[in-house]
Image 1 (cartoon, rainbow, N blue to C red):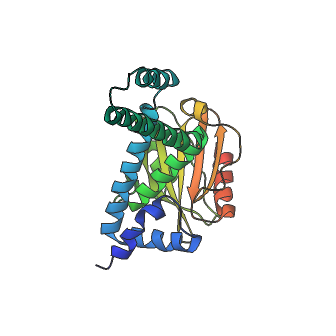
Image 2 (cartoon, rainbow, N blue to C red):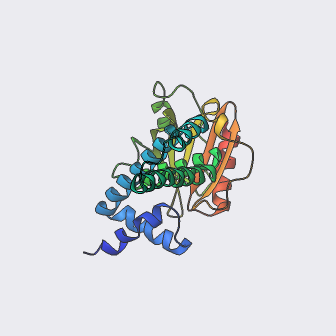
Image 3 (cartoon, rainbow, N blue to C red):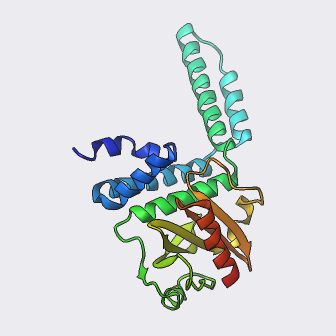
Length: 248
Protein backbone atom coordinates (compact mmCIF):
# COMPACT_ATOMS: atom_id res chain seq x y z
CA UNK A 1 0.00 0.00 0.00
CA UNK A 2 1.17 3.51 -0.79
CA UNK A 3 0.43 4.82 2.73
CA UNK A 4 2.02 1.96 4.67
CA UNK A 5 5.37 3.76 4.94
CA UNK A 6 3.59 6.85 6.29
CA UNK A 7 1.46 4.93 8.77
CA UNK A 8 4.50 3.05 10.08
CA UNK A 9 5.88 6.37 11.36
CA UNK A 10 2.55 7.98 12.30
CA UNK A 11 3.02 7.60 16.07
CA UNK A 12 6.49 9.11 15.83
CA UNK A 13 5.04 12.05 13.90
CA UNK A 14 2.22 12.60 16.39
CA UNK A 15 4.71 12.53 19.27
CA UNK A 16 6.82 15.21 17.56
CA UNK A 17 9.85 12.91 17.30
CA UNK A 18 10.65 13.55 13.65
CA UNK A 19 12.84 16.20 12.08
CA UNK A 20 11.44 19.56 10.99
CA UNK A 21 11.58 18.56 7.31
CA UNK A 22 9.80 15.25 8.00
CA UNK A 23 7.18 17.11 10.08
CA UNK A 24 6.39 19.35 7.08
CA UNK A 25 6.17 16.33 4.79
CA UNK A 26 3.85 14.54 7.21
CA UNK A 27 1.68 17.65 7.62
CA UNK A 28 1.24 17.88 3.87
CA UNK A 29 0.49 14.18 3.45
CA UNK A 30 -1.97 13.96 6.36
CA UNK A 31 -3.92 16.96 5.03
CA UNK A 32 -4.21 15.39 1.57
CA UNK A 33 -4.79 11.72 2.48
CA UNK A 34 -8.21 10.84 3.97
CA UNK A 35 -6.99 7.43 5.17
CA UNK A 36 -3.96 8.77 7.06
CA UNK A 37 -5.87 11.78 8.43
CA UNK A 38 -8.57 9.47 9.86
CA UNK A 39 -5.88 7.20 11.33
CA UNK A 40 -4.06 10.20 12.83
CA UNK A 41 -7.27 11.51 14.42
CA UNK A 42 -8.03 8.09 15.95
CA UNK A 43 -4.54 7.82 17.42
CA UNK A 44 -4.59 11.37 18.79
CA UNK A 45 -7.90 10.71 20.53
CA UNK A 46 -6.53 7.45 21.97
CA UNK A 47 -3.39 9.20 23.26
CA UNK A 48 -5.47 11.91 24.92
CA UNK A 49 -7.74 9.29 26.54
CA UNK A 50 -4.71 7.42 27.90
CA UNK A 51 -3.24 10.65 29.28
CA UNK A 52 -6.53 11.55 30.96
CA UNK A 53 -6.89 8.06 32.46
CA UNK A 54 -3.30 8.15 33.71
CA UNK A 55 -3.91 11.41 35.57
CA UNK A 56 -7.22 10.19 36.99
CA UNK A 57 -6.09 6.83 38.34
CA UNK A 58 -2.57 7.57 39.59
CA UNK A 59 -2.22 5.68 42.92
CA UNK A 60 -1.68 7.80 46.01
CA UNK A 61 1.40 7.43 48.22
CA UNK A 62 -0.83 6.10 51.02
CA UNK A 63 -2.31 3.40 48.77
CA UNK A 64 1.15 2.38 47.52
CA UNK A 65 2.46 2.12 51.11
CA UNK A 66 -0.56 0.09 52.25
CA UNK A 67 -0.16 -2.40 49.39
CA UNK A 68 3.57 -2.79 50.03
CA UNK A 69 2.91 -3.44 53.73
CA UNK A 70 0.22 -5.97 52.87
CA UNK A 71 2.54 -7.86 50.55
CA UNK A 72 5.43 -7.73 53.04
CA UNK A 73 3.24 -9.14 55.85
CA UNK A 74 2.41 -12.35 53.95
CA UNK A 75 4.37 -15.41 55.29
CA UNK A 76 6.48 -17.39 52.85
CA UNK A 77 4.72 -20.79 52.62
CA UNK A 78 6.91 -22.23 49.92
CA UNK A 79 9.62 -21.29 47.45
CA UNK A 80 7.10 -21.16 44.61
CA UNK A 81 4.66 -18.96 46.51
CA UNK A 82 7.43 -16.70 47.73
CA UNK A 83 8.73 -16.28 44.21
CA UNK A 84 5.23 -15.42 42.97
CA UNK A 85 4.73 -12.76 45.65
CA UNK A 86 8.17 -11.32 45.00
CA UNK A 87 7.41 -11.14 41.28
CA UNK A 88 4.07 -9.45 41.98
CA UNK A 89 5.72 -6.91 44.26
CA UNK A 90 8.43 -6.24 41.70
CA UNK A 91 5.82 -5.77 38.99
CA UNK A 92 3.93 -3.26 41.14
CA UNK A 93 7.12 -1.34 41.85
CA UNK A 94 8.07 -1.26 38.17
CA UNK A 95 4.61 -0.12 37.10
CA UNK A 96 4.56 2.50 39.82
CA UNK A 97 8.02 3.71 38.89
CA UNK A 98 7.11 3.98 35.20
CA UNK A 99 3.93 5.86 36.06
CA UNK A 100 5.85 8.24 38.31
CA UNK A 101 8.52 8.84 35.69
CA UNK A 102 5.99 9.44 32.92
CA UNK A 103 3.83 11.79 34.95
CA UNK A 104 6.56 13.33 37.07
CA UNK A 105 8.79 14.35 34.18
CA UNK A 106 6.00 16.35 32.59
CA UNK A 107 4.73 19.37 34.46
CA UNK A 108 1.11 20.42 34.33
CA UNK A 109 2.16 23.18 31.94
CA UNK A 110 3.87 20.75 29.55
CA UNK A 111 0.79 18.51 29.58
CA UNK A 112 -1.39 21.47 28.63
CA UNK A 113 0.88 22.34 25.69
CA UNK A 114 0.92 18.69 24.62
CA UNK A 115 -2.87 18.58 24.67
CA UNK A 116 -3.05 21.85 22.72
CA UNK A 117 -0.71 20.36 20.10
CA UNK A 118 -2.94 17.25 19.94
CA UNK A 119 -6.00 19.43 19.34
CA UNK A 120 -4.15 21.34 16.61
CA UNK A 121 -3.07 18.14 14.79
CA UNK A 122 -6.43 16.39 15.21
CA UNK A 123 -8.33 19.36 13.81
CA UNK A 124 -6.12 19.70 10.75
CA UNK A 125 -6.42 15.95 10.15
CA UNK A 126 -10.21 16.16 10.26
CA UNK A 127 -12.25 16.22 7.06
CA UNK A 128 -14.18 19.18 8.55
CA UNK A 129 -11.64 21.27 10.47
CA UNK A 130 -14.01 24.22 11.06
CA UNK A 131 -17.71 24.45 11.93
CA UNK A 132 -18.11 28.03 10.72
CA UNK A 133 -16.32 28.71 7.43
CA UNK A 134 -15.66 32.37 6.77
CA UNK A 135 -12.85 34.84 6.24
CA UNK A 136 -14.96 37.58 7.85
CA UNK A 137 -14.29 38.08 11.58
CA UNK A 138 -17.74 39.68 11.91
CA UNK A 139 -19.25 36.35 10.86
CA UNK A 140 -16.99 34.06 12.89
CA UNK A 141 -17.11 35.94 16.21
CA UNK A 142 -20.94 36.04 16.53
CA UNK A 143 -21.09 32.30 15.76
CA UNK A 144 -19.57 31.56 19.18
CA UNK A 145 -22.21 33.53 21.10
CA UNK A 146 -24.22 31.16 23.30
CA UNK A 147 -21.79 28.31 22.64
CA UNK A 148 -19.00 29.34 25.02
CA UNK A 149 -19.31 31.24 28.35
CA UNK A 150 -17.19 34.23 27.35
CA UNK A 151 -16.62 36.73 24.54
CA UNK A 152 -13.41 37.66 22.72
CA UNK A 153 -12.29 39.88 19.87
CA UNK A 154 -10.78 38.87 16.56
CA UNK A 155 -8.09 41.06 14.97
CA UNK A 156 -8.39 43.03 11.77
CA UNK A 157 -6.19 41.30 9.17
CA UNK A 158 -6.11 44.01 6.54
CA UNK A 159 -2.54 44.80 5.43
CA UNK A 160 -1.30 41.56 7.02
CA UNK A 161 -0.27 38.23 5.47
CA UNK A 162 -2.76 36.26 7.55
CA UNK A 163 -6.16 35.02 6.42
CA UNK A 164 -8.95 33.60 8.58
CA UNK A 165 -10.34 30.20 7.55
CA UNK A 166 -13.01 29.84 10.23
CA UNK A 167 -13.57 28.46 13.71
CA UNK A 168 -15.00 25.70 15.83
CA UNK A 169 -15.74 24.86 19.44
CA UNK A 170 -13.16 22.83 21.32
CA UNK A 171 -12.61 21.42 24.81
CA UNK A 172 -9.61 21.24 27.14
CA UNK A 173 -10.10 19.43 30.47
CA UNK A 174 -13.83 19.42 29.67
CA UNK A 175 -13.71 23.23 29.51
CA UNK A 176 -15.28 24.78 26.37
CA UNK A 177 -13.23 27.18 24.28
CA UNK A 178 -12.82 28.69 20.84
CA UNK A 179 -10.51 27.35 18.14
CA UNK A 180 -9.69 29.66 15.22
CA UNK A 181 -7.64 28.61 12.19
CA UNK A 182 -5.51 31.04 10.19
CA UNK A 183 -3.35 30.64 7.10
CA UNK A 184 -0.04 32.32 6.34
CA UNK A 185 2.01 31.30 3.29
CA UNK A 186 0.38 27.82 3.14
CA UNK A 187 0.96 27.19 6.86
CA UNK A 188 -1.99 26.59 9.20
CA UNK A 189 -1.96 28.30 12.60
CA UNK A 190 -4.40 27.48 15.40
CA UNK A 191 -5.51 30.07 17.95
CA UNK A 192 -7.19 28.69 21.08
CA UNK A 193 -9.07 30.83 23.59
CA UNK A 194 -10.18 29.58 27.03
CA UNK A 195 -11.14 31.12 30.34
CA UNK A 196 -7.97 31.67 32.37
CA UNK A 197 -9.42 30.41 35.66
CA UNK A 198 -10.01 26.95 34.18
CA UNK A 199 -6.30 26.51 33.38
CA UNK A 200 -4.56 28.64 36.02
CA UNK A 201 -3.71 25.66 38.24
CA UNK A 202 -1.86 23.91 35.39
CA UNK A 203 0.06 26.87 33.97
CA UNK A 204 2.83 29.16 35.15
CA UNK A 205 4.84 32.00 33.66
CA UNK A 206 7.86 29.90 32.64
CA UNK A 207 8.86 29.85 28.95
CA UNK A 208 7.38 27.26 26.63
CA UNK A 209 9.38 24.02 26.50
CA UNK A 210 11.86 23.84 23.61
CA UNK A 211 10.79 20.22 23.03
CA UNK A 212 7.44 21.24 21.57
CA UNK A 213 7.07 20.08 17.91
CA UNK A 214 5.42 23.39 16.99
CA UNK A 215 6.10 27.04 17.62
CA UNK A 216 3.81 28.18 20.43
CA UNK A 217 3.01 31.44 22.16
CA UNK A 218 0.63 31.82 25.09
CA UNK A 219 -0.50 34.67 27.31
CA UNK A 220 -3.26 35.73 29.66
CA UNK A 221 -5.34 38.83 28.95
CA UNK A 222 -8.64 40.13 30.35
CA UNK A 223 -9.36 36.83 32.10
CA UNK A 224 -8.75 34.74 28.97
CA UNK A 225 -5.91 32.39 28.10
CA UNK A 226 -4.68 32.46 24.48
CA UNK A 227 -2.58 29.85 22.67
CA UNK A 228 -1.14 30.43 19.18
CA UNK A 229 0.41 27.26 17.72
CA UNK A 230 1.53 26.00 14.32
CA UNK A 231 4.40 24.91 12.11
CA UNK A 232 4.80 28.45 10.77
CA UNK A 233 7.90 30.40 11.75
CA UNK A 234 8.30 31.79 15.25
CA UNK A 235 8.11 35.28 13.72
CA UNK A 236 4.70 34.53 12.15
CA UNK A 237 3.41 33.06 15.42
CA UNK A 238 4.57 36.18 17.25
CA UNK A 239 3.00 38.48 14.66
CA UNK A 240 -0.40 36.83 14.89
CA UNK A 241 -0.18 36.86 18.70
CA UNK A 242 0.49 40.62 18.62
CA UNK A 243 -2.58 41.16 16.43
CA UNK A 244 -4.74 39.30 18.98
CA UNK A 245 -3.20 41.21 21.90
CA UNK A 246 -3.97 44.50 20.17
CA UNK A 247 -7.54 43.43 19.38
CA UNK A 248 -8.19 42.43 22.99
